[in-house]
Length: 117
Image (cartoon, rainbow, N blue to C red):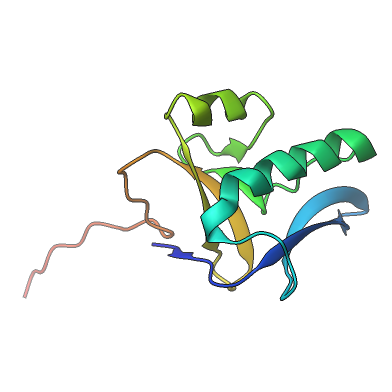
């Protein structure tokens, strides 16, 4: 299971496969952390709209639906269907995930195993 990201982050424009995208990066002086993840998401959408740049799929993701977060998902957060959580990905980089409340997710798929001897 992914761990909560400890520390502050900021939002910036980076590139992925030659295209500009909005990314979350570590920033000691950043205004966002795991306590204000919703404000981070709202600010990212504001910047995305202002700069006409999409959100980066590795930084903004919904694991249960296997897709990038969209503007319409803010309504689902307000309705309580998702909780924004700032997590550390497998390399320790910050990523904002929308998780279903009170549900645990594993970062790796588990295979079944049966002992034979």
